[in-house]
Image: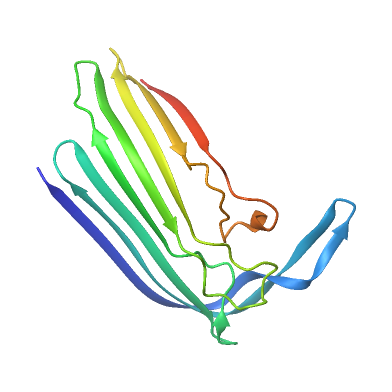
Length: 193
């Protein structure tokens, strides 16, 4: 049958004495190179946001899932944007459930899509580099489970960043030096008894 679920969470919160890392103007120069320096700061902060998740089962074979989040954060003391706040993001998944057989069960094929927006809520000149561009990643995964007399043996394969897109994640401080993870293939076997 068709099943739908949807969850929406909205929040607005004041955080007293919020601690965060802030880039400072000085840089560390060593034999290994020039490195950015960060300093812990403390302020009163206001966070607002929306988290959503939902799923829809079209029939016994196809299921669609969506997840998204938006976060807004301000430094109340200086009325400016806080650094290192996650960008807006939206993730979609479409899963095909393969019919069970006498020995094989929980078999599936899945496609994933992730969109991450550019972080536009930051103070100009307050970081070593401007926030990176938005990006989209596509992934795929498949799995199955083989029933044993006592327990089961599961096999899964997942490919993240299938198109090997060059991107930088705003929350990753290594973005100053390099792109984020390229194509990543994970193969997993799980034995349950």
